[in-house]
Image 1: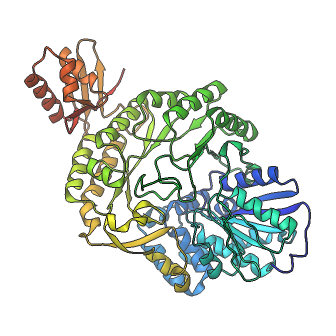
Image 2: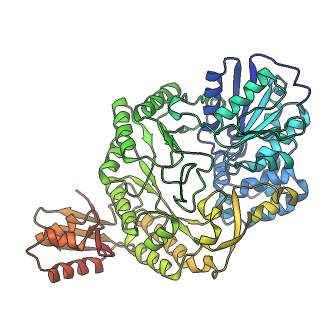
Image 3: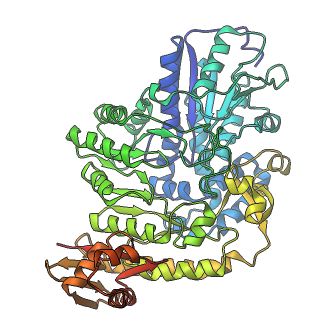
Length: 623
């Protein structure tokens, strides 16, 4: 950083870069948010974004790039072979051993090999680096999130070889407070490491560049290499007020998209954020650990903050009008019922056919789901994670399996896609929890299936912080990093994905019956609901004083039952979980024995699910 310390050019030129394996079908909100913020706050700054991942996706082919970007290690293997050629064979072996490889191979020609992939990616990356006049920039920032580590290292090293005097900033969810100095020690090419959110730290660095004081930037989330020292600061951490942030600037992404050949061109989604952090997770003011034990998505936030619904509507309208795109990707951990209600009411008033896919909690009511649907929601991401109440409690989720079934049923009835995962192999899980899960699946398999997701330990999560409580030990950076990185680096920096040991028997073997059941569930559901016009697998038709319930089977057969008026009334009452005592009070003239017998029959027929004295009707209404 010495040669440029005597120069101060205005406006300050900042390059902001995002590399593979960012999802290609959307602009980077990190780049867009940072550009909009620093240009508004600093009148002598010009920020240029570089969505290199989009052009590398074009070079590989978007279908193949998409599969690689969704795989956990495939993309990192490719760039590891470029950064560390002596590790290329080990990287190739890891690439070939990945469970997802058969899906990747569907996008590869028979002639394409791992070395060919590496050559294609290297040519595309080097070409992009060579296409930019980097000498005009005063500083370059690289955002590094999930699966962007090795691609960013490759880019930074290639850039420093050609332009060694350009200061480099790195930031993103890869970096944890208290461990930034390790990165500066491990990577001499990096001059600044930002932990936490990026807006005010980046602004602090730019102000320092403008004024050139003897000391480095004073923001506590900025860690810099200045005259060979890593200065500390006692300045209190303070995050941006999210309601004061400008809408992200995605201009450069859409300009690059315009250069894609017409045969490959697509309509991307527009990322927007209405909140940062999670109100249920531990934060700087928490007196005890709380939140989902497996989640490490909020380590960079000190507290939960949210925008007003009308502000979100205004930003979405602005982005739609600017880019003529209707697909909106809301990045929040979840939308609260109040936010969802007001947000989607505002979107309805826009009079545009928006396509939105928000995240919601399992407690979200059917009424709120309906308002989401009527305001442009085509589906929801639901934090289901498990179908065993005991396991849900172990995970730190304050819901029951019956609550998860209820939102799955409501989404099925409304025609909303219920996108949700089931975590397999959670540490400490038991045979009883596996049995509970299999029982619940036997009832849930009339709804859209859950995606199997084997547990992986994330640095910063509650289970990572409180290892004894969850029975894990030997926690370390994921073993695959030792394949891809030199040992000195793999052992010195804290990386997002972690490996661990447990005393229990093989968790993979324990959960393999559930994994098999999920695959069978997916196959049977997709075979029956093969077209948009296919009926639900379990539905009812209301005759006023009777009810007809139809259950479709995978072999094409169906079972139909007619419920009498009293059974009909009971069934409709249980469209949300009801306790037996509540049911008894609603039917005072019916004896307890008769009610219990009816409920047993409906449960045995797989029409009602029972848990701890609560009952839930499973059929969806079909008019």
